[in-house]
Length: 233
Length: 85
Image (cartoon, rainbow over all chains, first blue to last red; front, side, top):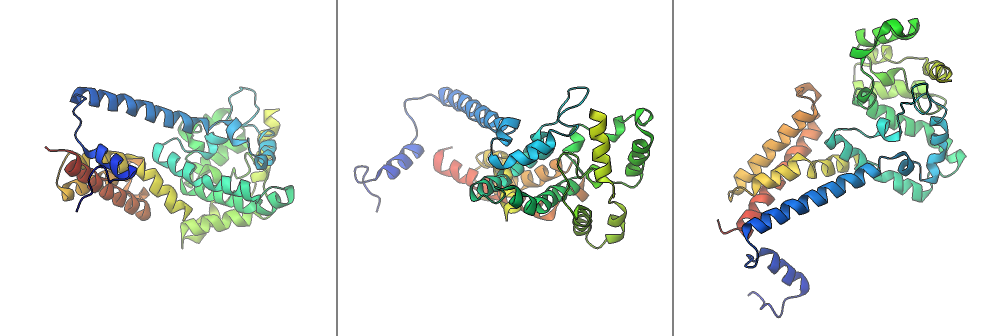
């Protein structure tokens, strides 16, 4: 038996109000009000999401100081043209579904910040390989989707690249390689044993096809990073 | 687990969740609402794989379809409960 309106609690009264047809507003008013409210809520949500993409937001945590320092030494931070790639350009996908997934998964970063998982340089170094490995796995699986937001083989002019870069990029196209196969340490320092770890990542993703994955791991990431950093100066 | 939660959340506030709910609200038939939501789930996964069937992950597709089915059903339930037409 249903309770009388007087006996209902506040949740019951709200529930009842939601499902009772309105008599004070016209359909047009409700449609317009709902439309405007939708724009405000969606715009606000999207705007807030974009605020979490700023470099200031990403580096506001104490534990991000180490990788910020490393990134500041790279061509993505400082270069002759002044075009920069900030944290979110490499770590947050542009497409909505992938972006939301990345944002939800990034909640773990707050937990680890609070738990102090990488709060000291020693702890940071201890976790560097596993953190790098997680990013490589994502990049390899997505065919370096975030790199390709700016870089595209189709528009690379190999004639104005260094001979070695041009030949390696041509090889990458021919062998269906992806950016992260060679550029693992492009923005952050590489931990010891990175090559073996990257090989393991590619093998896991490739499943049984371990032979082809062996061919798709470049062994000179450190050299590439050093070259690009020098060129940026 | 985190991967699963991320995919689930992304689908809820993406096409399967929002469009699925909206399409569900267009009918009083629960099965039809669920069907339309599920189709949006398939459609969305295909869009984000750039139309490449080989690029679709089975788990991603499954989560997307389930979210679409649920959203479509909830949409139809809202129509039943909240409208007289």
